[in-house]
Image (tube, rainbow, N blue to C red):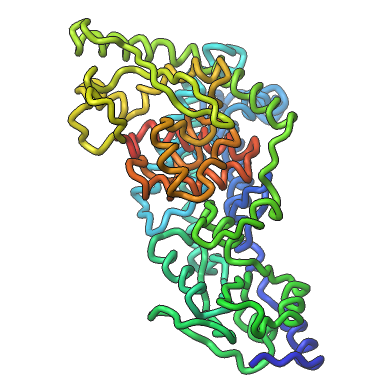
Length: 490
């Protein structure tokens, strides 16, 4: 089916070299094992300088008599802090993620919410570091200009990405049962930013599901790849031992086209590890799953410092939450309750939370998941759970070392015992400390069943495999959106 002649290789190599250079932006950039779409990395750089210019514009509008560029260096520390906080706020509201079919109104709301969050954080920063304050008028003008400039940049960015279709162009090698997993993932929205161009049937493929569009290459694979500007080839054969075009795949790889196995493809572009196709050897042969003393050290330092920085903001909120629980329960119910959970390496510990359920929530002694509209949740408890305020006492668990700020959700031993029997590799999530927030918590709704446990484990394993400072910061920033908008709470 696929020719492998020297002439074809030569012609195809020339074709690879003539690929539109705009396709470069469709690839992903690897940052600490986590892959980020390259176009968003570039957008981040553009907005960094756009926000910097907006900051100085606010100063210039407020103090037109000053020649700001002569004092550029004097304002630089304040400008850098402003830009970093504003970009962190944009990340927190998912502004650097693909939002399919997002209207201009929704884009403006997202950017506006990011600016408001940035203003709040900057106001707190001014309180603790008055030297950064430039005046209310200049600061307000800087934020206003920032909103206008970022919106203009975003609208241009959206027009460019639409015109050039910067989605990754994927060729799936295989059209059988294995390849159908890719097709099934597309309508679920798991492969945003990916354009599956075609499926090529291979020897040994078993009968596929209906709906897969098949393409037979008339010549060498590399010529077909060059002509169709393929970025990534995904190996999804049902039987690799029957007719895998090794030499042609090597030609494509040497020509700059990535060749990925199906599991790595899903890991990179869905940010989870598919348990249904994972082989045991992949766990220890693939890069990642490394827990060393250095990682434990920086993780612990990060946890302690971050919690101490949060305390001045959290303590007043915690006091109000405690008072609300006392009033709602008429002083007859405890404010904080503890519960046994599973920590790193299966160690048990007591987790602390604000009481959000009635005292006799499990009077029969049977552990139950919280459900949507759970009758056991009190009026105040429903509000606390919606915005995750019931979990504030867990900061004490983080300081004590039972938990980390970021990690898999700490589960009850009764659930762990059941899930570890029914779900393969479930106990691997206990290789790291559980977290107050986590990759699975921000990527998947609240888990309240064994099926949810299976789905969330795939995200937990991704975190355990690719844990880094960048991924922890990303989780923390995106947790802000989950908390402020009350996403996925039960």
